Image (cartoon, rainbow, N blue to C red; front, side, top):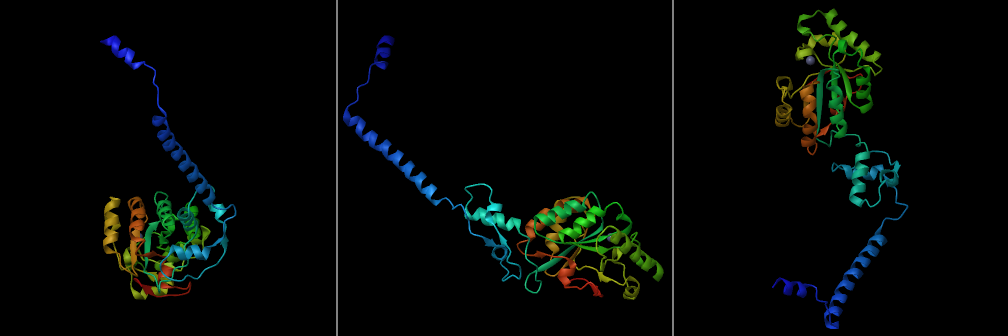
Length: 301
Ligand code: ZN
């Protein structure tokens, strides 16, 4: 039995023309189809010199909030497209990623101002700024004067990123317990430290703990920025809880008080990603359309 099977397996095969021709046609068809597909792909490859796209066009594509004031400086897509084979959608995304967003208009857009108190902090300030930058968001940092020395680079980045830097007193006392002179000293000493860090003098002030009386304005001599949303980020060490609290309480035109600390920094990317379809994150100056000389007391828009 075994020998018979073995002989059968090695017997030479003879194929008739009726067996081979239909198979040759099928295989030939496949080869032709592949060839045609390759030719079509090559024909459709983008031309070597691509059209220039203006930043204004891309900026318009980046927002659904209507017309945008802005420059029309031209970008060469070649610079954004080093790899070959990128399609139009990828190109558009790359342009949008490379562009700063247009100037916010809080008359037309739903703006909110995130504020971070008690920095600068080497552990968290840069992480917050990374999240802001990655999400085209801006915010306001209220800094404690006696923490500024040695952290000039942090303040300089805030300024370069387009964030606001405000004054949060020299040593964070309750102003309710201070004399007029002491209040002025707390404010002025911090102004000086911030200027020494190489950034412009702040025009915004936030009183520690929100402890503030209208009579203090003559000693403070800056716009006083309180808040109307307090997610109590200081009470949480879990970034997920901070994100949940912010997302629950945020509202159009809000000034949101938060803190420059690690758990809050860790929550920022999620908060911004979740909320940016609905809100434009701007500085307090932008939210309230403040001039550097504007005084007054503000809690929101
Ligand atoms: Zn504070």
